[in-house]
Length: 566
Image 1: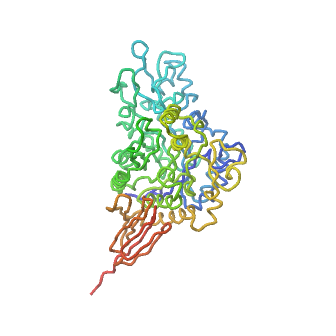
Image 2: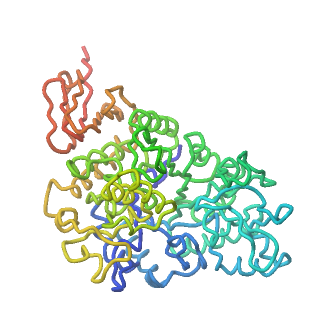
Protein backbone atom coordinates (compact mmCIF):
# COMPACT_ATOMS: atom_id res chain seq x y z
CA UNK A 1 0.00 0.00 0.00
CA UNK A 2 1.36 3.42 -0.98
CA UNK A 3 2.08 5.52 2.09
CA UNK A 4 0.07 8.74 2.40
CA UNK A 5 0.95 11.79 4.49
CA UNK A 6 -2.30 11.57 6.45
CA UNK A 7 -1.36 8.13 7.80
CA UNK A 8 1.16 9.98 9.99
CA UNK A 9 -1.30 12.77 10.85
CA UNK A 10 -2.34 13.99 14.28
CA UNK A 11 -5.61 15.90 13.97
CA UNK A 12 -6.76 18.66 16.33
CA UNK A 13 -10.47 19.41 16.16
CA UNK A 14 -11.35 23.04 16.78
CA UNK A 15 -14.89 24.08 17.60
CA UNK A 16 -14.42 27.65 16.31
CA UNK A 17 -17.06 29.37 18.43
CA UNK A 18 -15.48 28.01 21.62
CA UNK A 19 -11.77 28.41 20.92
CA UNK A 20 -10.76 32.09 21.14
CA UNK A 21 -12.79 35.30 20.86
CA UNK A 22 -11.04 38.36 19.47
CA UNK A 23 -14.18 40.25 18.45
CA UNK A 24 -15.28 40.84 22.06
CA UNK A 25 -18.71 39.34 21.41
CA UNK A 26 -18.34 36.09 23.35
CA UNK A 27 -18.00 33.92 20.23
CA UNK A 28 -14.75 32.39 19.05
CA UNK A 29 -13.52 33.41 15.60
CA UNK A 30 -10.94 32.75 12.89
CA UNK A 31 -8.66 35.51 14.16
CA UNK A 32 -8.57 33.71 17.49
CA UNK A 33 -7.41 30.50 15.80
CA UNK A 34 -4.73 32.40 13.86
CA UNK A 35 -3.45 33.89 17.11
CA UNK A 36 -3.14 30.44 18.68
CA UNK A 37 -1.46 28.59 15.80
CA UNK A 38 1.93 28.44 17.49
CA UNK A 39 0.34 26.89 20.56
CA UNK A 40 -1.35 24.30 18.33
CA UNK A 41 1.96 23.59 16.63
CA UNK A 42 3.62 23.12 20.03
CA UNK A 43 1.32 20.17 20.73
CA UNK A 44 2.77 18.20 17.85
CA UNK A 45 -0.43 18.53 15.86
CA UNK A 46 -0.12 18.26 12.06
CA UNK A 47 -3.74 18.90 10.97
CA UNK A 48 -6.53 21.11 12.26
CA UNK A 49 -10.16 20.30 11.51
CA UNK A 50 -12.58 23.19 11.80
CA UNK A 51 -16.26 22.63 12.49
CA UNK A 52 -18.43 24.56 9.99
CA UNK A 53 -17.60 28.22 9.45
CA UNK A 54 -19.86 28.78 6.42
CA UNK A 55 -22.77 31.20 6.37
CA UNK A 56 -25.64 29.72 8.38
CA UNK A 57 -28.80 30.57 10.36
CA UNK A 58 -27.30 28.36 13.11
CA UNK A 59 -30.31 26.18 13.77
CA UNK A 60 -27.76 23.39 14.27
CA UNK A 61 -24.54 25.22 15.13
CA UNK A 62 -23.48 25.79 11.52
CA UNK A 63 -24.39 22.38 10.12
CA UNK A 64 -27.30 24.10 8.36
CA UNK A 65 -25.38 25.87 5.60
CA UNK A 66 -27.06 28.67 3.65
CA UNK A 67 -24.02 29.60 1.53
CA UNK A 68 -21.06 27.25 1.02
CA UNK A 69 -19.02 29.99 -0.63
CA UNK A 70 -19.23 32.55 2.19
CA UNK A 71 -17.81 32.72 5.71
CA UNK A 72 -20.31 33.44 8.45
CA UNK A 73 -19.61 36.97 9.74
CA UNK A 74 -19.64 35.74 13.34
CA UNK A 75 -16.39 33.90 12.57
CA UNK A 76 -14.70 36.49 10.35
CA UNK A 77 -14.02 37.14 6.70
CA UNK A 78 -12.58 35.44 3.64
CA UNK A 79 -9.41 37.42 4.27
CA UNK A 80 -9.18 35.73 7.67
CA UNK A 81 -9.51 32.32 6.00
CA UNK A 82 -6.72 33.14 3.58
CA UNK A 83 -4.48 34.26 6.42
CA UNK A 84 -5.32 31.20 8.50
CA UNK A 85 -4.41 28.86 5.66
CA UNK A 86 -1.20 30.71 4.86
CA UNK A 87 0.00 30.93 8.46
CA UNK A 88 -0.93 27.32 9.27
CA UNK A 89 0.92 26.06 6.21
CA UNK A 90 4.01 28.07 7.18
CA UNK A 91 4.01 26.18 10.48
CA UNK A 92 3.61 22.80 8.76
CA UNK A 93 -0.04 22.45 9.78
CA UNK A 94 -2.63 21.33 7.26
CA UNK A 95 -6.27 22.47 7.46
CA UNK A 96 -9.44 20.54 6.70
CA UNK A 97 -12.95 21.99 6.61
CA UNK A 98 -16.22 20.40 7.65
CA UNK A 99 -18.28 19.80 4.50
CA UNK A 100 -22.00 19.17 5.02
CA UNK A 101 -23.19 16.86 2.22
CA UNK A 102 -26.48 15.42 3.40
CA UNK A 103 -28.53 18.60 3.69
CA UNK A 104 -28.55 22.37 3.46
CA UNK A 105 -30.31 25.10 5.37
CA UNK A 106 -33.85 25.83 4.28
CA UNK A 107 -32.51 29.35 3.68
CA UNK A 108 -30.11 28.12 1.00
CA UNK A 109 -30.95 29.58 -2.44
CA UNK A 110 -31.40 26.05 -3.84
CA UNK A 111 -34.19 25.28 -1.42
CA UNK A 112 -35.75 28.70 -1.73
CA UNK A 113 -35.97 28.09 -5.47
CA UNK A 114 -37.28 24.54 -4.93
CA UNK A 115 -40.19 25.91 -2.89
CA UNK A 116 -41.41 27.87 -5.91
CA UNK A 117 -43.04 24.79 -7.41
CA UNK A 118 -42.65 21.35 -8.93
CA UNK A 119 -41.43 22.75 -12.24
CA UNK A 120 -38.55 24.70 -10.73
CA UNK A 121 -35.16 23.31 -11.87
CA UNK A 122 -33.99 23.14 -8.23
CA UNK A 123 -37.01 21.12 -7.09
CA UNK A 124 -35.15 17.87 -7.73
CA UNK A 125 -32.19 19.03 -5.61
CA UNK A 126 -34.23 17.84 -2.63
CA UNK A 127 -36.39 14.84 -1.71
CA UNK A 128 -40.16 15.17 -2.03
CA UNK A 129 -43.19 12.94 -1.59
CA UNK A 130 -46.92 13.20 -1.95
CA UNK A 131 -48.96 12.57 1.18
CA UNK A 132 -50.75 9.30 1.79
CA UNK A 133 -54.52 9.26 1.24
CA UNK A 134 -56.20 11.62 3.65
CA UNK A 135 -53.17 13.93 3.75
CA UNK A 136 -51.19 11.66 6.06
CA UNK A 137 -47.38 11.63 6.30
CA UNK A 138 -45.66 9.68 3.49
CA UNK A 139 -44.32 7.15 6.02
CA UNK A 140 -43.55 6.61 9.71
CA UNK A 141 -39.82 7.36 9.71
CA UNK A 142 -38.50 9.49 12.58
CA UNK A 143 -35.97 12.30 12.35
CA UNK A 144 -32.86 12.20 14.52
CA UNK A 145 -34.05 15.50 15.99
CA UNK A 146 -37.50 14.17 16.92
CA UNK A 147 -40.80 13.97 15.05
CA UNK A 148 -41.24 12.89 11.44
CA UNK A 149 -38.64 13.18 8.68
CA UNK A 150 -41.38 14.81 6.59
CA UNK A 151 -42.45 18.45 6.64
CA UNK A 152 -45.21 19.87 4.45
CA UNK A 153 -44.01 22.63 2.15
CA UNK A 154 -45.43 26.05 3.07
CA UNK A 155 -47.35 26.78 -0.14
CA UNK A 156 -47.76 23.41 -1.89
CA UNK A 157 -49.18 20.00 -1.15
CA UNK A 158 -46.01 17.88 -1.00
CA UNK A 159 -43.71 16.97 1.87
CA UNK A 160 -39.95 17.43 1.88
CA UNK A 161 -37.54 15.08 3.66
CA UNK A 162 -35.32 16.17 6.58
CA UNK A 163 -33.34 13.64 8.56
CA UNK A 164 -32.30 16.30 11.05
CA UNK A 165 -34.15 19.58 11.86
CA UNK A 166 -37.06 20.63 9.64
CA UNK A 167 -34.95 23.68 8.72
CA UNK A 168 -32.35 21.31 7.20
CA UNK A 169 -33.84 19.62 4.10
CA UNK A 170 -31.94 16.61 2.72
CA UNK A 171 -30.29 16.83 -0.67
CA UNK A 172 -31.22 14.36 -3.40
CA UNK A 173 -27.99 12.58 -4.31
CA UNK A 174 -29.74 10.66 -7.08
CA UNK A 175 -29.62 13.95 -8.95
CA UNK A 176 -26.25 14.28 -10.71
CA UNK A 177 -26.60 18.06 -10.62
CA UNK A 178 -26.37 17.91 -6.84
CA UNK A 179 -23.14 15.95 -7.05
CA UNK A 180 -21.74 18.41 -9.58
CA UNK A 181 -22.55 21.35 -7.31
CA UNK A 182 -20.88 19.66 -4.34
CA UNK A 183 -17.77 19.09 -6.48
CA UNK A 184 -17.74 22.79 -7.43
CA UNK A 185 -17.94 23.77 -3.76
CA UNK A 186 -15.11 21.44 -2.77
CA UNK A 187 -12.93 22.56 -5.69
CA UNK A 188 -13.44 26.19 -4.72
CA UNK A 189 -12.02 25.54 -1.24
CA UNK A 190 -9.20 23.38 -2.57
CA UNK A 191 -8.22 26.30 -4.80
CA UNK A 192 -8.18 28.43 -1.65
CA UNK A 193 -5.62 26.08 -0.11
CA UNK A 194 -7.74 23.81 2.08
CA UNK A 195 -6.05 20.40 2.42
CA UNK A 196 -9.13 18.23 2.71
CA UNK A 197 -12.56 17.75 4.19
CA UNK A 198 -14.38 16.04 6.98
CA UNK A 199 -17.59 14.74 5.38
CA UNK A 200 -20.48 15.24 7.76
CA UNK A 201 -23.20 12.56 7.98
CA UNK A 202 -22.29 11.11 4.58
CA UNK A 203 -23.66 7.66 5.46
CA UNK A 204 -27.19 9.04 5.03
CA UNK A 205 -26.90 10.17 1.40
CA UNK A 206 -28.85 7.17 0.07
CA UNK A 207 -32.49 6.55 1.07
CA UNK A 208 -34.55 3.43 0.44
CA UNK A 209 -36.56 3.66 -2.75
CA UNK A 210 -40.31 3.99 -2.22
CA UNK A 211 -39.94 5.09 1.43
CA UNK A 212 -41.40 1.89 2.97
CA UNK A 213 -42.91 2.07 6.45
CA UNK A 214 -41.05 0.56 9.38
CA UNK A 215 -42.89 -2.07 11.39
CA UNK A 216 -44.39 -0.17 14.32
CA UNK A 217 -47.61 0.54 16.16
CA UNK A 218 -50.26 2.50 14.27
CA UNK A 219 -49.46 6.20 14.36
CA UNK A 220 -46.00 5.68 15.85
CA UNK A 221 -43.02 7.54 14.36
CA UNK A 222 -39.79 5.51 14.70
CA UNK A 223 -36.15 5.68 13.69
CA UNK A 224 -35.56 3.76 10.47
CA UNK A 225 -31.80 3.59 10.07
CA UNK A 226 -32.06 0.49 7.93
CA UNK A 227 -33.71 2.70 5.32
CA UNK A 228 -31.49 5.78 5.48
CA UNK A 229 -28.08 4.74 6.84
CA UNK A 230 -25.19 2.95 5.10
CA UNK A 231 -27.18 1.93 2.02
CA UNK A 232 -25.44 0.53 -1.04
CA UNK A 233 -25.16 3.71 -3.12
CA UNK A 234 -23.36 5.71 -0.43
CA UNK A 235 -19.88 4.46 -1.32
CA UNK A 236 -20.44 5.16 -5.01
CA UNK A 237 -21.72 8.67 -4.33
CA UNK A 238 -18.62 9.55 -2.28
CA UNK A 239 -16.24 7.79 -4.70
CA UNK A 240 -17.68 9.69 -7.67
CA UNK A 241 -16.96 12.99 -5.94
CA UNK A 242 -13.63 11.90 -4.46
CA UNK A 243 -12.19 10.75 -7.80
CA UNK A 244 -12.72 14.20 -9.27
CA UNK A 245 -11.22 15.92 -6.22
CA UNK A 246 -8.17 13.64 -6.21
CA UNK A 247 -7.48 14.52 -9.83
CA UNK A 248 -7.37 18.15 -8.77
CA UNK A 249 -5.44 17.55 -5.55
CA UNK A 250 -3.87 14.07 -5.40
CA UNK A 251 -2.89 14.39 -1.74
CA UNK A 252 -6.30 15.55 -0.49
CA UNK A 253 -7.35 14.09 2.89
CA UNK A 254 -10.97 12.90 3.05
CA UNK A 255 -12.19 12.04 6.54
CA UNK A 256 -15.73 10.68 6.75
CA UNK A 257 -18.17 10.73 9.66
CA UNK A 258 -19.62 7.21 9.64
CA UNK A 259 -21.36 7.24 13.01
CA UNK A 260 -22.99 3.81 12.91
CA UNK A 261 -20.37 1.99 10.83
CA UNK A 262 -19.08 -1.33 12.08
CA UNK A 263 -15.62 -2.50 11.03
CA UNK A 264 -16.87 -3.98 7.75
CA UNK A 265 -18.62 -0.75 6.78
CA UNK A 266 -15.61 1.30 7.88
CA UNK A 267 -13.40 -0.81 5.63
CA UNK A 268 -15.82 -0.44 2.72
CA UNK A 269 -15.76 3.33 3.03
CA UNK A 270 -11.99 3.66 3.52
CA UNK A 271 -10.47 0.85 1.45
CA UNK A 272 -8.35 2.57 -1.24
CA UNK A 273 -9.74 0.16 -3.83
CA UNK A 274 -13.17 1.77 -3.40
CA UNK A 275 -11.77 5.31 -3.91
CA UNK A 276 -14.11 6.89 -1.36
CA UNK A 277 -12.87 8.15 2.05
CA UNK A 278 -9.31 7.90 3.31
CA UNK A 279 -10.53 7.04 6.81
CA UNK A 280 -13.75 7.33 8.80
CA UNK A 281 -14.88 8.07 12.33
CA UNK A 282 -17.17 5.43 13.81
CA UNK A 283 -19.17 5.96 17.01
CA UNK A 284 -19.19 2.17 17.55
CA UNK A 285 -16.00 2.36 19.63
CA UNK A 286 -17.81 2.93 22.90
CA UNK A 287 -20.27 0.20 23.96
CA UNK A 288 -21.92 1.30 27.16
CA UNK A 289 -23.13 -0.68 30.17
CA UNK A 290 -26.63 0.53 30.99
CA UNK A 291 -27.42 -2.03 33.68
CA UNK A 292 -27.12 0.59 36.44
CA UNK A 293 -29.75 2.90 34.94
CA UNK A 294 -33.18 3.44 36.46
CA UNK A 295 -35.67 2.20 33.88
CA UNK A 296 -38.41 4.36 35.39
CA UNK A 297 -36.61 7.32 33.83
CA UNK A 298 -35.63 7.90 30.19
CA UNK A 299 -32.45 5.83 29.90
CA UNK A 300 -30.98 8.15 27.25
CA UNK A 301 -30.96 10.97 29.81
CA UNK A 302 -28.77 9.10 32.30
CA UNK A 303 -24.99 8.84 32.49
CA UNK A 304 -23.38 5.71 31.08
CA UNK A 305 -20.46 3.49 32.01
CA UNK A 306 -18.07 1.99 29.49
CA UNK A 307 -18.48 -1.74 28.98
CA UNK A 308 -14.76 -2.47 29.16
CA UNK A 309 -14.94 -6.08 27.93
CA UNK A 310 -16.98 -5.10 24.86
CA UNK A 311 -14.73 -2.06 24.31
CA UNK A 312 -11.66 -4.30 24.14
CA UNK A 313 -13.36 -6.57 21.62
CA UNK A 314 -14.50 -3.73 19.37
CA UNK A 315 -11.18 -1.87 19.46
CA UNK A 316 -9.33 -5.06 18.55
CA UNK A 317 -11.75 -5.68 15.66
CA UNK A 318 -11.07 -2.21 14.25
CA UNK A 319 -7.31 -2.49 14.79
CA UNK A 320 -7.04 -5.86 13.05
CA UNK A 321 -9.72 -5.23 10.43
CA UNK A 322 -8.22 -1.96 9.20
CA UNK A 323 -4.54 -2.64 9.87
CA UNK A 324 -3.52 -3.06 6.24
CA UNK A 325 -5.18 0.20 5.16
CA UNK A 326 -3.73 2.49 7.83
CA UNK A 327 -5.87 1.68 10.85
CA UNK A 328 -8.92 3.48 12.22
CA UNK A 329 -9.28 7.00 13.55
CA UNK A 330 -8.53 7.19 17.27
CA UNK A 331 -10.56 9.48 19.49
CA UNK A 332 -12.35 9.73 22.84
CA UNK A 333 -14.57 12.76 22.30
CA UNK A 334 -15.85 15.30 19.78
CA UNK A 335 -18.31 18.18 19.58
CA UNK A 336 -21.29 15.78 19.73
CA UNK A 337 -20.08 13.81 22.76
CA UNK A 338 -19.28 14.41 26.40
CA UNK A 339 -15.64 15.15 27.15
CA UNK A 340 -13.38 12.15 27.70
CA UNK A 341 -12.53 12.69 31.36
CA UNK A 342 -16.18 13.28 32.30
CA UNK A 343 -17.43 10.25 30.39
CA UNK A 344 -14.64 7.71 30.85
CA UNK A 345 -12.26 9.08 33.50
CA UNK A 346 -12.39 10.16 37.13
CA UNK A 347 -13.04 13.89 37.34
CA UNK A 348 -13.39 14.09 41.10
CA UNK A 349 -10.60 11.92 42.53
CA UNK A 350 -8.00 11.14 39.87
CA UNK A 351 -8.45 13.54 37.00
CA UNK A 352 -4.86 13.99 35.84
CA UNK A 353 -3.90 10.34 35.90
CA UNK A 354 -7.13 9.23 34.24
CA UNK A 355 -6.74 11.72 31.36
CA UNK A 356 -3.15 10.63 30.79
CA UNK A 357 -4.18 6.97 30.91
CA UNK A 358 -6.98 7.43 28.38
CA UNK A 359 -4.72 9.33 25.99
CA UNK A 360 -1.98 6.68 26.25
CA UNK A 361 -4.42 3.85 25.66
CA UNK A 362 -6.07 5.35 22.60
CA UNK A 363 -3.42 7.27 20.73
CA UNK A 364 -0.55 4.76 20.72
CA UNK A 365 -2.70 2.24 18.88
CA UNK A 366 -2.49 2.05 15.09
CA UNK A 367 -4.43 4.82 13.39
CA UNK A 368 -4.95 8.57 13.25
CA UNK A 369 -5.47 10.44 16.54
CA UNK A 370 -8.19 13.09 16.54
CA UNK A 371 -8.03 15.33 19.61
CA UNK A 372 -10.80 17.72 20.65
CA UNK A 373 -9.48 21.13 21.60
CA UNK A 374 -9.12 21.32 25.37
CA UNK A 375 -8.66 17.63 26.08
CA UNK A 376 -4.90 18.24 26.21
CA UNK A 377 -5.40 20.24 29.42
CA UNK A 378 -7.97 17.83 30.87
CA UNK A 379 -11.07 19.96 30.31
CA UNK A 380 -14.25 18.42 31.66
CA UNK A 381 -17.86 18.82 30.54
CA UNK A 382 -19.32 22.31 30.73
CA UNK A 383 -21.24 22.47 33.98
CA UNK A 384 -24.47 24.35 34.48
CA UNK A 385 -25.52 25.32 38.00
CA UNK A 386 -29.29 24.87 37.73
CA UNK A 387 -31.48 21.97 36.62
CA UNK A 388 -33.58 24.54 34.73
CA UNK A 389 -30.70 25.71 32.48
CA UNK A 390 -31.09 22.98 29.83
CA UNK A 391 -32.99 22.71 26.57
CA UNK A 392 -33.02 19.02 25.74
CA UNK A 393 -35.64 16.72 24.24
CA UNK A 394 -37.48 14.99 27.11
CA UNK A 395 -35.56 17.08 29.65
CA UNK A 396 -38.62 18.44 31.45
CA UNK A 397 -40.18 14.99 31.83
CA UNK A 398 -36.85 13.56 33.10
CA UNK A 399 -36.41 16.35 35.63
CA UNK A 400 -39.97 16.18 36.98
CA UNK A 401 -40.07 12.37 37.08
CA UNK A 402 -36.69 12.09 38.81
CA UNK A 403 -37.70 14.57 41.49
CA UNK A 404 -41.04 12.78 41.92
CA UNK A 405 -39.16 9.49 42.47
CA UNK A 406 -37.13 11.12 45.24
CA UNK A 407 -33.88 11.85 43.41
CA UNK A 408 -32.06 15.00 44.52
CA UNK A 409 -31.58 18.08 42.36
CA UNK A 410 -27.85 17.32 42.53
CA UNK A 411 -28.48 13.93 40.86
CA UNK A 412 -30.64 15.50 38.15
CA UNK A 413 -28.05 18.19 37.46
CA UNK A 414 -25.28 15.59 37.27
CA UNK A 415 -27.22 13.66 34.61
CA UNK A 416 -28.26 16.70 32.57
CA UNK A 417 -24.75 18.16 32.48
CA UNK A 418 -23.55 14.93 30.85
CA UNK A 419 -26.33 14.91 28.27
CA UNK A 420 -26.29 18.60 27.33
CA UNK A 421 -25.67 19.25 23.64
CA UNK A 422 -23.02 21.76 24.75
CA UNK A 423 -21.28 19.39 27.19
CA UNK A 424 -18.03 19.44 25.20
CA UNK A 425 -18.51 22.94 23.78
CA UNK A 426 -17.51 24.95 26.81
CA UNK A 427 -14.93 27.54 25.84
CA UNK A 428 -11.19 26.88 25.82
CA UNK A 429 -9.55 27.55 29.17
CA UNK A 430 -6.46 29.59 28.37
CA UNK A 431 -5.65 31.35 31.62
CA UNK A 432 -6.88 32.32 35.08
CA UNK A 433 -8.64 35.54 34.08
CA UNK A 434 -12.37 36.11 34.48
CA UNK A 435 -13.50 34.17 31.40
CA UNK A 436 -10.49 31.85 31.26
CA UNK A 437 -8.75 34.01 28.65
CA UNK A 438 -11.31 33.11 26.00
CA UNK A 439 -12.91 36.56 25.91
CA UNK A 440 -13.37 39.73 27.90
CA UNK A 441 -17.16 39.27 27.86
CA UNK A 442 -19.35 36.30 28.92
CA UNK A 443 -18.92 33.40 26.45
CA UNK A 444 -21.85 32.19 24.37
CA UNK A 445 -21.80 28.69 25.86
CA UNK A 446 -20.52 29.25 29.36
CA UNK A 447 -17.12 28.52 30.88
CA UNK A 448 -15.71 26.36 33.65
CA UNK A 449 -13.43 28.36 35.92
CA UNK A 450 -10.65 25.95 36.93
CA UNK A 451 -7.25 27.60 37.35
CA UNK A 452 -5.37 24.26 37.40
CA UNK A 453 -6.90 23.23 34.08
CA UNK A 454 -5.75 26.14 31.96
CA UNK A 455 -2.97 26.35 29.40
CA UNK A 456 -1.28 29.09 31.44
CA UNK A 457 -0.91 26.98 34.58
CA UNK A 458 -0.11 23.71 32.84
CA UNK A 459 2.70 25.27 30.81
CA UNK A 460 4.47 25.79 34.16
CA UNK A 461 4.51 22.15 35.21
CA UNK A 462 6.61 19.39 33.64
CA UNK A 463 4.12 16.80 34.95
CA UNK A 464 0.99 18.53 33.64
CA UNK A 465 -1.51 16.87 31.33
CA UNK A 466 -0.50 19.34 28.62
CA UNK A 467 3.16 18.41 28.69
CA UNK A 468 2.30 14.71 28.92
CA UNK A 469 0.28 15.09 25.69
CA UNK A 470 3.22 16.77 23.96
CA UNK A 471 5.52 13.91 24.93
CA UNK A 472 2.96 11.26 23.99
CA UNK A 473 2.30 12.75 20.56
CA UNK A 474 6.03 12.99 19.90
CA UNK A 475 6.29 9.23 20.41
CA UNK A 476 3.14 8.64 18.37
CA UNK A 477 4.97 10.01 15.32
CA UNK A 478 7.71 7.39 15.51
CA UNK A 479 7.60 4.34 13.19
CA UNK A 480 6.92 1.92 16.07
CA UNK A 481 3.59 3.62 16.77
CA UNK A 482 2.61 4.53 13.22
CA UNK A 483 3.56 1.26 11.53
CA UNK A 484 3.99 -1.33 14.27
CA UNK A 485 1.75 -4.40 14.37
CA UNK A 486 -0.99 -4.35 17.01
CA UNK A 487 -1.81 -7.17 19.41
CA UNK A 488 -4.32 -6.95 22.27
CA UNK A 489 -3.19 -8.96 25.31
CA UNK A 490 -5.36 -11.05 27.57
CA UNK A 491 -5.54 -9.44 31.02
CA UNK A 492 -7.99 -8.99 33.85
CA UNK A 493 -11.15 -7.00 33.25
CA UNK A 494 -9.87 -3.58 34.34
CA UNK A 495 -6.64 -3.59 32.35
CA UNK A 496 -6.24 -2.67 28.68
CA UNK A 497 -2.82 -3.89 27.52
CA UNK A 498 -1.49 -4.24 24.01
CA UNK A 499 1.72 -4.50 22.05
CA UNK A 500 3.07 -2.65 19.04
CA UNK A 501 5.88 -4.48 17.25
CA UNK A 502 8.18 -3.29 14.49
CA UNK A 503 11.38 -5.12 13.63
CA UNK A 504 13.39 -5.77 16.80
CA UNK A 505 11.32 -3.41 18.92
CA UNK A 506 8.17 -4.24 20.88
CA UNK A 507 6.26 -1.70 22.94
CA UNK A 508 4.08 -2.90 25.80
CA UNK A 509 1.31 -0.44 26.62
CA UNK A 510 -0.53 -1.14 29.88
CA UNK A 511 -3.46 0.95 31.08
CA UNK A 512 -5.61 0.61 34.19
CA UNK A 513 -9.28 1.65 34.16
CA UNK A 514 -9.66 0.85 37.86
CA UNK A 515 -9.62 3.27 40.77
CA UNK A 516 -7.34 0.87 42.67
CA UNK A 517 -3.91 -0.60 41.92
CA UNK A 518 -3.77 -3.49 39.44
CA UNK A 519 -0.84 -5.73 38.52
CA UNK A 520 0.41 -7.20 35.27
CA UNK A 521 3.08 -9.92 35.08
CA UNK A 522 5.40 -10.08 32.07
CA UNK A 523 8.36 -12.45 32.15
CA UNK A 524 10.24 -10.31 29.62
CA UNK A 525 10.85 -7.72 32.32
CA UNK A 526 13.28 -10.11 33.97
CA UNK A 527 14.88 -11.33 30.73
CA UNK A 528 15.13 -8.56 28.16
CA UNK A 529 16.58 -5.06 28.17
CA UNK A 530 13.85 -2.43 28.26
CA UNK A 531 13.19 1.20 28.94
CA UNK A 532 10.13 3.02 30.18
CA UNK A 533 9.19 5.37 27.37
CA UNK A 534 6.42 7.27 29.13
CA UNK A 535 4.17 6.80 32.15
CA UNK A 536 1.83 8.71 34.38
CA UNK A 537 2.17 8.92 38.16
CA UNK A 538 2.79 6.28 40.85
CA UNK A 539 3.39 3.13 38.81
CA UNK A 540 6.10 0.62 39.83
CA UNK A 541 8.03 -2.23 38.22
CA UNK A 542 9.22 -4.93 40.61
CA UNK A 543 10.94 -7.88 38.97
CA UNK A 544 8.55 -9.26 36.37
CA UNK A 545 5.52 -7.37 37.76
CA UNK A 546 4.09 -4.02 36.76
CA UNK A 547 2.07 -2.41 39.54
CA UNK A 548 -0.24 0.06 37.85
CA UNK A 549 -1.50 2.91 39.99
CA UNK A 550 -5.18 3.79 39.98
CA UNK A 551 -5.76 4.89 36.36
CA UNK A 552 -2.11 4.14 35.74
CA UNK A 553 -0.50 3.93 32.30
CA UNK A 554 2.98 2.84 31.33
CA UNK A 555 4.75 2.25 28.01
CA UNK A 556 7.70 -0.12 28.03
CA UNK A 557 9.88 -0.78 24.98
CA UNK A 558 11.72 -4.10 24.77
CA UNK A 559 14.61 -4.92 22.49
CA UNK A 560 15.05 -8.47 21.27
CA UNK A 561 18.02 -10.35 22.60
CA UNK A 562 20.88 -10.41 20.07
CA UNK A 563 21.27 -13.71 18.26
CA UNK A 564 24.56 -15.50 19.02
CA UNK A 565 26.58 -16.16 15.84
CA UNK A 566 28.80 -19.09 16.80
